[in-house]
Length: 559
Image (cartoon, rainbow, N blue to C red; front, side):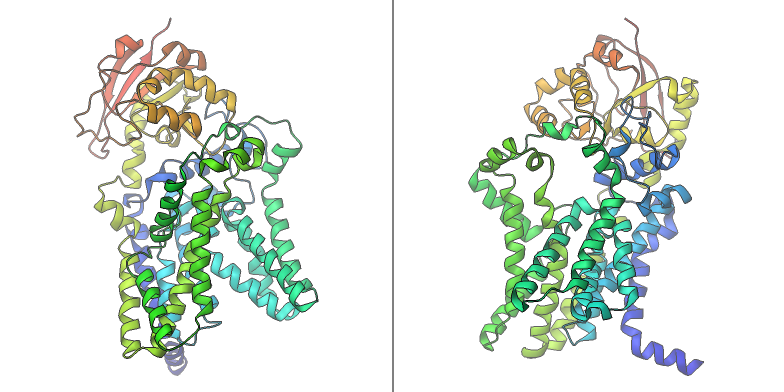
């Protein structure tokens, strides 16, 4: 028995060490629980609450509106019952579900990249080190395997492409499970499109069809279609509603700004797909190309991957170029669907290129093995440093518990003393999802899609403030995904602690429009000095020792 364990450790110690490091990376979630600092943007301010509301509603297969949000949020705008993340929120508390999601994402990212790189790099330390660094990237949390799972999906597709019907059955099984843990619209629509192009190229080159490969592509696509049946139903069967996305008016960058944006994305990435490749990976690739030139090598794959990422960055920037408005204005799908998201493939490509560059240095550079070891360790430390707990603690952001401040909002609910379904609230100087998380019915929200006519109705409330701030006005009118009670002087800042000395003494809202939508109370993280001018009656403020917030409660006065 001991010899067996010894052999396992000897043969797989590199994997065991990597898994141990990932466990340390994940440890804050398990040790701190709700006291963990996690990402706010497109996370605490949105997706976590969307899953929680859906889980608590019990309307998994129903097409009934959710009454908690904007007087009835269409069911089709939230996740379908075939999204595994939904069931995590059904079975567990939100932070526990989040922790499980992070764990699955990290280990799937590691083993997926490990299996992929092992196909063409004969160095277990390079393969393990690069895979470990990839697994610790600051992936968008709610994307789950949308980005982290791409290497695994690519490995499985390449396996089926090579082995055809002889590919192991579990390769097929895992491939068909990935759709339930990832987002089709975000990344896999582009990934599957590229797999389709690869199948077509093979067909042309070899003059024969690889039907196993084709079946894998078609099978995965079909599962995504079934998973997203609510969106398809709303688009093609039910009359549904006109989404606010049809009013999008994005993309007026000049050509010079377009090139600048392309360069920025190529060198630093996007907030949702950060590869942390600027300080280590890009210089390493540059050094590898110099070594290859000196050694008269032809690193076609390395050059091809770098050029491919450059093309993705240029396409991403081009999507916001003013010259493409003619396309968006004449083809609705080009206006409502973000084709620029193909750049979410960037992290996978950068780390494959990183591994290839290290392989060149390992084999063809003096002291290459020592240099590569140092580079791998440095990059792993680089990405470990942006662990959510470490990063957002440094930035003095709230923890999960502090952000939602459940006890504080329980006291507000008790003070009002009515069933939460009997009155509607809006939030000022804070994210409305905080109130939603705590059971309040809100007129404001942040969602991917909602009725366009509601956007126009809500706009009447904040129109006076939008007119004071052209930047906010443009932000709301051209995009508008955040139906927030914007305040001109605050801009796009939505986090204010009780230690803030900010005071709102020039707020100007259309209270009649607020009443017309059913608004009863205003929850504000900052005092509204001129509340009487806005026909708001101050009730009282709320605070406690556990929450960084102080909430000022105002009642909307009757006409």
